[in-house]
Length: 165
Image 1 (cartoon, rainbow, N blue to C red):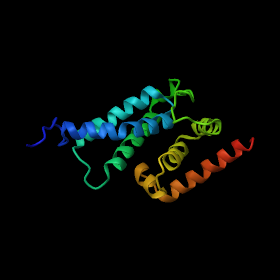
Image 2 (spheres, rainbow, N blue to C red; image 1 turned 30 degrees about the vertical axis):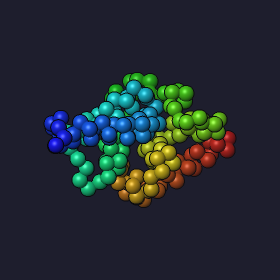
Image 3 (tube, rainbow, N blue to C red; image 1 turned 90 degrees about the vertical axis):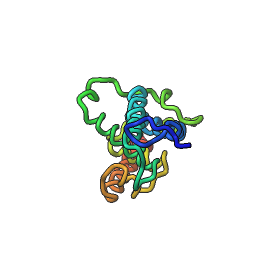
Image 4 (cartoon, rainbow, N blue to C red; image 1 turned 180 degrees about the horizontal axis):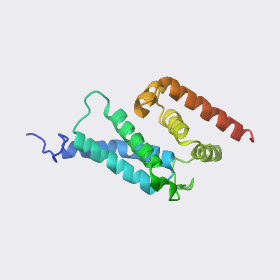
């Protein structure tokens, strides 16, 4: 028996539910850390799955890589929008949930939130999502050397802040 599709794309309802169950937590965490705004992170995750449903499949990329790429692009679009400048987008550290963070992790997380947007994205993808520099470059649509430079800048900024800067 063939699976029923929900239309625009060719993803069945079961497949869409599987994608949401598998990746919504990862995407929500990445978007929350990137934007510092829980409500907007939830909207972006929903929009990401809507795009997956409309696309109907993942031809040349893994589904995880494609979903992260779409979510990060939506975060970037949101960050560039005029709306970004007119709202309080600073979620409290308590609102950004990580499994039982120790005080040192909370301090680092607070510092990461203050990094420039692109550096913040790179740090989050590299250290929290354990992506390689090449994967980050593909996800963000930039060169690997640009990712390397951004990561180095971010590490220098964080080191200065952690040393009392």
